[in-house]
Image (tube, rainbow, N blue to C red; front, top):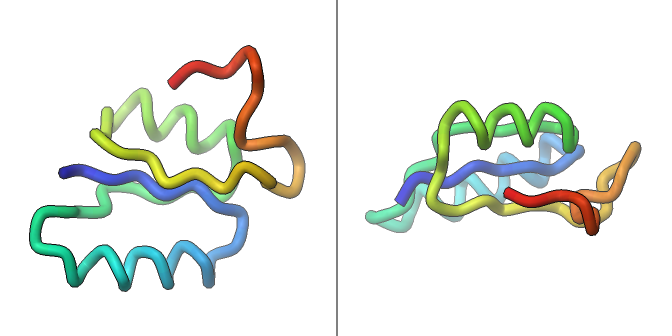
Length: 68
C-alpha cells in the first residue's frame, strides 16, 4: 500500500517511515511538513493511506472543511 506522511517534525516522519519500511506491503511515497503541502502531495500521488498529525504547527491537520 502506498503511504503519505504529513507531520511538521522531520524526526517524527523519519521514525514512522523507518517503522513502515519493515512492513513488506507498505511503501512511503511522499512526505510533507504542512497541511497545504500535504494536501497537494495527496492529490498528486493518491496514496492509499495518509498518516497525518492532527496538531500541525500552523494549522490543524484535521478541519471540518477538509476532505481527503
